[in-house]
Image (cartoon, rainbow, N blue to C red; front, side):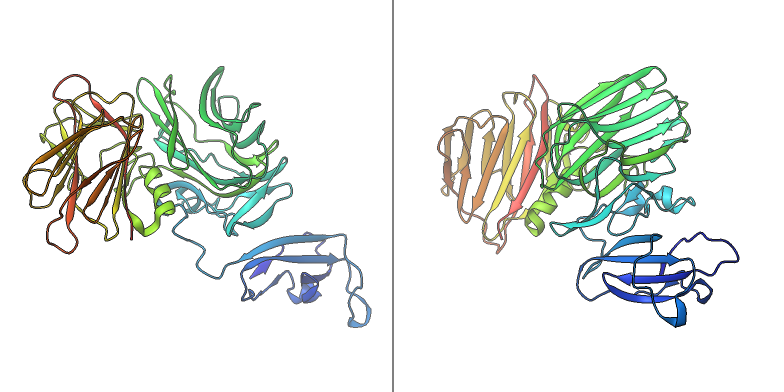
Length: 480
């Protein structure tokens, strides 16, 4: 059902004409109910322009006007060949305080939209739907965008809740001095995400006369490339933490003074708009509740990015960007009372502690492991690979430059190598292990157990003394 919001005097009976491209869909007087029509979507996927015109009076003798009316509205409707809500979109919807899928609708699918009367955003200026790179989105520019009459930040009982603001977008050119989102709340509070004069993405929070500055480290987005940008805000009693991510990888961690505890939920939100972002925004959301309904930032930023990149080849991806450790039922700490913590988007494994990842099958064509550490790797740290049912690992790597492998006869083979910075990359194929180094890869042969698809685990061990082991990301991908 398509409906036009028309304004005319009570006694008038204007003539209304609906058309798709150059084909008239329906025409007649308002008395005949032509303010709305039923539109049958075409079978082919694409963007279709629908126009409605209003003439003061009907044409003579039941004919039609040969010219266009000066009073007209045009809408662009996206027709998809499949369900609009895809695996790439932000889900689950009940985890979001505000959520605009922008897949042909301006509806807010988050809590704020479903629990209030404000379900849809309003258009600013001239916008159009775009299906660039097969991804539906809203094309915006300077002076065009969306206005939502409420503040999309989750302010609960006067305090900002932990949350993650996510934009998926495709820039069309350089984005210096452009607004991505602005939230106004009179003179007491102002939140803004924008590209500064150098093209760096920045967020600012203005509270009365104080301005908090949160630079992202994200500069010069490539025109025409699809990107996901996340900003996680974690309000604590003594500080505000902000974490930025680009395409799943952390780019900045900032600590600022704490926010006051008497913030108001009032305000309105502009997406793009005046001096707005030039490009296509495909989705925007504000995550604030985890699957257990606890207040949280988005704990799956890295995992979701790797899922889109690797698809069903992905075994495990953890970026530690949440507020809590991964599932303790499958991630084992030894000793059990070890106080492993998450801080600034990384895992802190205290000295003399071991973290064992869930068991998984070794891929038929091989499996790749990539572990990214933060800062200098403390001496004595190790990464061990062990078969299910075996008592000892068959491979132990010290990321600082030593690897020990168990040979088929039970003998141990040791070799030193030059590390590749703070990354550790291992690839296991049928009977052979490859360790990436700053020079030539190191190769070891091994014999898997007799099971058709052997189960394998990875353990990370911090040094017995000295500094904690800090881990940024863990990625395991199978070659199918």
